[in-house]
Length: 141
Image (cartoon, rainbow, N blue to C red; front, side, top):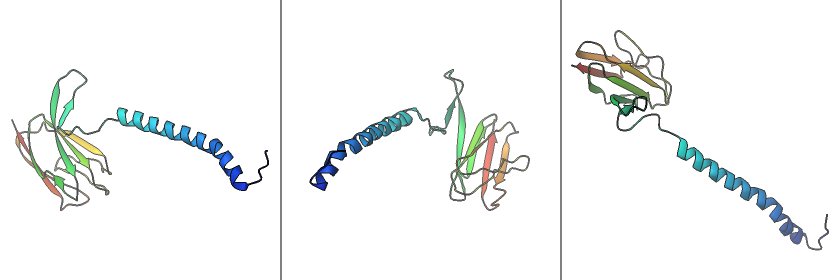
């Protein structure tokens, strides 16, 4: 190891050895962020339309957010055969409970889908964990 008469001279001579790996690490980190950011896909399409199998055909999916201990929107109208997707955006678990069926417990970020093949009519639902959370699905032909 070389001897230096001035201790600060030794520190400055070691900087290239320390900075080069840090520069390489920073460059690799930037590349990883760019690659990840360009390939990540959103789980929920903001237009409310889900693409089917790459055929170009679409089927409308109605989106309901569970946010702030409420279903948003609280009332929706769907055609018979249409799908509704609930997404839990709260940090606490929720469910989607109808008289004849119920979702599993949904943690933050979880989704539940149901295709309404039921007869046209009004279907009230709630959260089994927080019964004051209520919503309504109106099914039409």
